Length: 197
Image 1 (cartoon, rainbow, N blue to C red):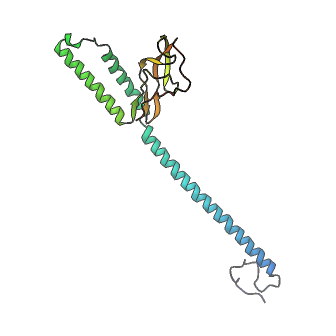
Image 2 (image 1 turned 90 degrees about the vertical axis):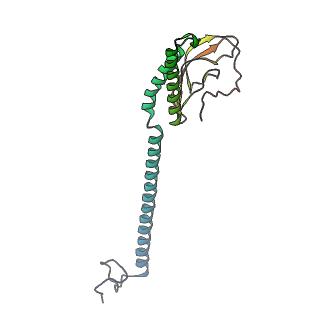
Image 3 (image 1 turned 180 degrees about the vertical axis):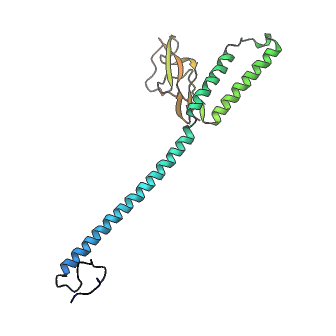
């Protein structure tokens, strides 16, 4: 005699009182439900892991944007710093012989340069120390070679344009003049071209 409603969640097309409902059939149904449960649990765990990965990547993107989002602006501002440096570098050695009004202008330009460099440092932009350091292709771009037998070959002798790092990452390589003709640098000498604070 067949029941009107399935008992215990059995499928509708499988009558409970059916003689075909054997222990093996029930075991197959249970195994199928267990496999379906394991599959759904696996899909759930994968979805949770994917959600966690998306959240982590989004957080990394935000951190990267906050850290390096000013890169284009910083490159443009570096040209202002370069021009101030060139202007101050073109001054005569003896400033005392100049008109007092001109000395005041020079003092103002020097203060402006100091303030600009201070602002750059506050925003994670630091100058690469190049002069006197071993040439390092990661931080320096060689523009010329300078014959100097008194200095080990491959030493930065002249800095044409300073280089900068943004949060430890190269913003602009220093354009330098490198020594040649001197003794070979010892292979164990480690280049320390940057001032990463």
